[in-house]
Amino acid sequence: MIESRHDAGDSGPGVTLPGPSSFPVPSSATEIFGERLELAERFVSLLATDGVVRGLIGPREAPRLWERHLVNCGVMGSLIPSGASVIDVGSGAGLPGLVLAISRPDLVITLVEPLARRTVFLDEAVASLELDNVTVVRGRAEEVDLPGADVVTARAVAALDKLAGWCLPLASVGGRLLAMKGSSAAEEIAANQDLVSSLGGGEAVIHLCGVGLIDPPTTVVEIIKERHVVPGKARREAPSRRKPRRR
Ligand SMILES: C[S@@+](CC[C@H](N)C(=O)[O-])C[C@H]1O[C@@H](n2cnc3c(N)ncnc32)[C@H](O)[C@@H]1O
Image (cartoon, rainbow, N blue to C red):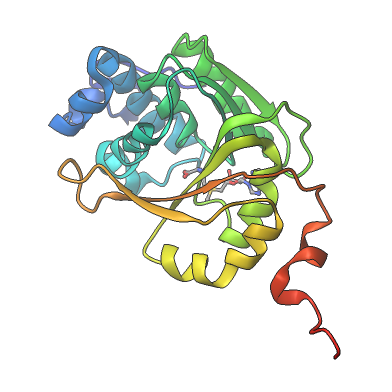
């Protein structure tokens, strides 16, 4: 493993790795991370070194880690209540899960990720950053057995229909799915609201997070889990799939 460095680094002969000074900290990051900014800088450094070397982050992402990844994820914290339990599905290199763990030490976070290469990185990042509010679980969202969470997050994991089927069962009743989405959010909701309802979800709402802080702001689809549905039963109950009654 290549150690993360806090100075503009050279990891050894022939390999020059970027240090945090390679990526100036935007003012938006100061606002999101506050006193934990130094920890966030160390995470950026880890992503730009180990994350890139291990193929978890594309090399072209390195210069835009702050805006496109850390701040982009961090702003969704405004939708998460204080002290909430959070399951981050498909964390990859820790987005948004580790960003939330850094910016919000009050949260209790579980990262769910099926790929070993990624969970190894996540475990090492948690140890290196000395985060005591994170547990890493290797597995698929639809297979893991975890206590219901107040909030289930996901970024760039799957289309809303699949995501709702995987994530709503992981939330407690009254909890919510927060799915980071792009410009397709409204279309995805329109196409899948019936399915979401059949899974026990309420009406999906779109939030724009970080207005005035990042451009574009982060689009988050929020779905409150209103009732428990036994996984696998949902589709048959979906109103749009019911056969019309005969008269
Ligand atoms: C495109 S990556 C996004 C990673 C990270 N959320 C981000 O925004 O950078 C999708 C991630 O979802 C994970 N994934 C795919 N299917 C999954 C499932 N059924 N349950 C949990 N994670 C899954 C993949 O292993 C991968 O790490």
